[in-house]
Image 1: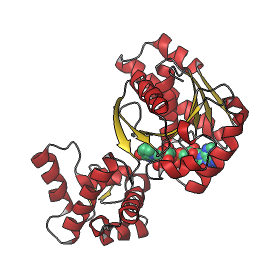
Image 2: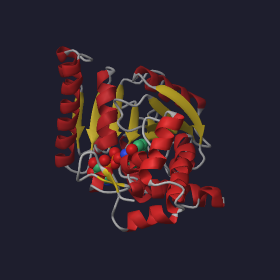
Image 3: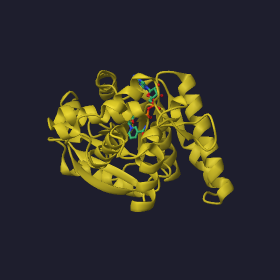
Image 4: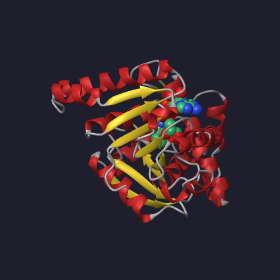
Length: 292
Ligand code: NAD
């Protein structure tokens, strides 16, 4: 499967619609599936709005936008994937949901089709083992927002074949991305390094080493990071940060990954960051006000 032309995307949320957007813009034919028509309509509206913004900025020609949108079809029926070369699963981060999706999907696929998952934390090897094609199963981890972020981590499960890795890496490059190859260890490369830094920022906050504004200013101005670690944690979602830390802690068994108690408290309070209106910052005012 050297040359992927027809792509299936499962899950039309923030990641799924971004993947469909970039793939269609790169010339692929895309079929996007979700549980409900409403989710698909919303995803197409989001892609249209994001492409309109590109047209306004002059980074996409209006005719190319129309052609890209015309290459995206939607369906709630797995039969729509029957001639796909590759299907990327980007549904909710729950192993039971993903397992059910693969069981429903694979009977409809060609034998040589590749299945990829965009999971941030579930072991690729374990997901692959439950399918009919562990050799043609691979992790393809995009970053949010997909049209802006240049990286794709390609994660090889224990059984993943070289040809599978080569095919998805070539596709990521056609989509304008740069590939980082990762082995199948908890949280792969980026989150393995990023989340301990965010966790350490939470410990520094809890211990009073600095307040929120000082910690974020420190890392922005002292390390040239575009966002401070606590601001970034709010952007990712504090529940997501906690979930990735749990995966690192359980998967690697090292106490250095223990999730910070203050981070856990924020999640228990429902202060999840930007998406809930409050996290380490309160987004009710502009600029957002630190909560400590
Ligand atoms: P999201 O909540 O925005 O979207 C998930 C979508 O999956 C929803 O539209 C939901 O209706 C759909 N879905 C749920 N069950 C389904 C099923 N049985 N069949 C088909 N569709 C189903 O979530 P998201 O942020 O787009 O995350 C999706 C995946 O991408 C997760 O595995 C997540 O870990 C991963 N990921 C997320 C980020 C991020 O920053 N949000 C980054 C990289 C990877």
